[in-house]
Length: 90
Image 1: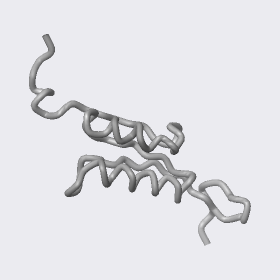
Image 2 (image 1 turned 135 degrees about the horizontal axis):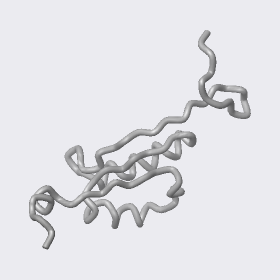
Image 3 (image 1 turned 180 degrees about the vertical axis):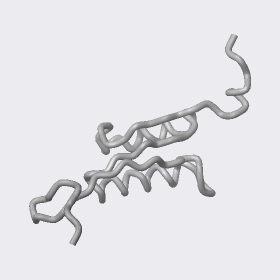
Image 4 (image 1 turned 135 degrees about the vertical axis):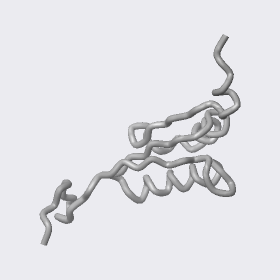
């Protein structure tokens, strides 16, 4: 039997924490589907954290509407669309 590398919960079960990065822009429907799925994941896995990656204009309005998840449970990494990244700043 392998030793527990995490912490123990109240039932003396080994609890492992993890951090996952999620591309919110992926899939057929983008962040309107992937972001709620991330919230469900965090509710089901209280010791996990997520790094949310996507385009700011698509992600931020949805994220504001789903705020019941404490911000300490996720980090957002938003970026501009590729066509804006190629244009040098004035």
